[in-house]
Length: 340
Figure (tube, rainbow, N blue to C red):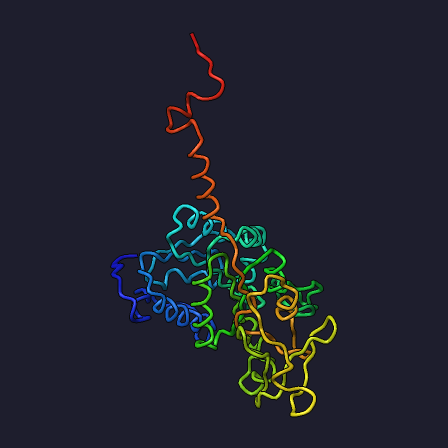
């Protein structure tokens, strides 16, 4: 990209001159707006941002950002983002990916980037379908979904993104809706400030091949009763009248009706995103309608050493005691044969 002038006051500064070519009504438009708003709040020069993508509708994202970008191949965005961050830890590296790109062909790179805790920000667009290649079922498609590659309904169990992230030793996991621009902006800011791999799952709508897939919880008329926005340090309360809450009943979460008698704000669970033990966070990430509300917001945010810092520290320690100080030293070390 050109004209990387530092001006952090306006989201428009992060808009490129490229025509946005997603379908009208696609949830990707809202994600783009939220990311540009978040970046304008971070106070980081544009030349310090890099957006990396693989293949899929979401992967056109770098073209629409007035930052540096790298459009990679299918499933390899995590590997590229890892290389960029390790080579230059000063950069703010963002990986844009979809449920197919990240969890199918890119699944191995995805889980190991998380395990290593590389300081990159992964935004995973989850529309539960392959949109770019015209409507095949994906690793997050619900069992029984009828698609072009499952005409009688898929028989596979879907991945839970949150379960996968936490199972891969993830330190930061959040979830949002594509149309909730304000909530999404807040989450992206928190993700950027987190030191380590942050994964944000966006429940995104593909208007062409899987339209309305999230409507059972994202529709305006039902959203307040079927989702809960988690905030660190605050009681887990939801519902149109804030009349429901979550408690721990033995080893399970349970939804209760709040009243002045048995259950009230004082005895529902308080969200602790920073708790190292992921037990409750794991349950929150896996909540599903109709038994539970779907959890939105930052579910897990735990401090931990990052890969690139650990690598730099290791190099510094080795340099202190190493006899090899330059390339000539290296070439002259070990076994040497003299050819006459």
